[in-house]
Length: 560
Image: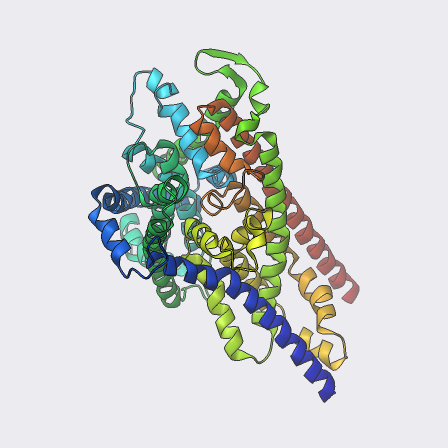
């Protein structure tokens, strides 16, 4: 028995070390290469802070920091406000069509941020629908970026507020009602204090997303420079890798701050819902429900209008001069990657979803279900949360410096689909890890103890017990990886090759070439596949829950 336990511990140690080595190679070493590059000159010699001094002393570059902070603050304040009101409408009112409103709010998640800007071009551009009606908006520049970032960050704010507002103790409101408190009093004395930590968390998350976004500034930024476009110009335009590294480290600042604030906030936010809590019963109020129904309807109509504009552009011969119906725009020009880029994206996303799901779930299993090796597991848990603080562009730049080095034995993956898959797995790793960890925490630890006592290999318990019982979480991880890989731009914009272009990057090239109709058509294909994957996920999870409920019902009947 002791000999078997020793073999089991050795196998666990080897598996744990292998996972940590892989994570260290794709996360820590590239980041070290990034920071090292920022302190070297073009000859590879140590330059200290000379690159930073040069950056901040160049007005055209240093102004990008103020511009980025400006657009991030405005878009964050507006999207947080809209996201809160939208979530409040779905949780604290009696409006109709709540499921419809919920899914409509998620539309921006299913398309790249470049497409948000493209949709705004069709609405407010020089030949946009609203512009042709006589209402002109200075889209290209600061205003356009802010509008696009609001669309990008609104779903994130909405989802976080939705979770916070759904879980509340109805007893507090019942007590307030018995004391004759008004609706405003309950809002300021109960609702806001309940979600104060969520408000802080949402603010920093939205600020970081807007601060590090590349898609919107690239399409409608015009001459309004921000840090994300600075990196692109320095690396892709001027091949100034050292200055690109400097900007990359600057992009890390708000992300790291957001990460720290999030950890502090989550540690303090212990929650107020207990076993004695009661469900909140929302009272009747025609004025309130009418206001919020109109509000949600306006948000939904605006998002649907953006998508409708993409359909209009993709299905018309030559907007706005020839509006005759055509499908010719779906026969993509090969100069921008063609339809092949779409299938490349499908290939990359499927590979990311498959290997990312396996890696995240196995990694979470080793962190959660392995006994002993506490130091290694603490290091592993630290690695698992670091991707939350890494913008996609920082990952892309660090991968260039690390994997493109001729002395690196892993240099052969540079310019292949493999490096795109690895960057996506790393970029989106933390959320799948937390999802898998949450599912595994619900499983009784006695499964592993019983398997060991019965001399059953740990891998059989993993495959026959842990995986089937965690199947809904595994499917959620798969869906999350797939959807995000289809829409990603910033994480792969520096890593794709001319031989393997992907759809989100092809949209950028189409927009640069003035092929807006083809860009709209490609956007619709991305939206279609992501909505289908999401719908399939919802259907499968529903069937699994139905089967589990049927099994429980049958067991109860048999026991009686």
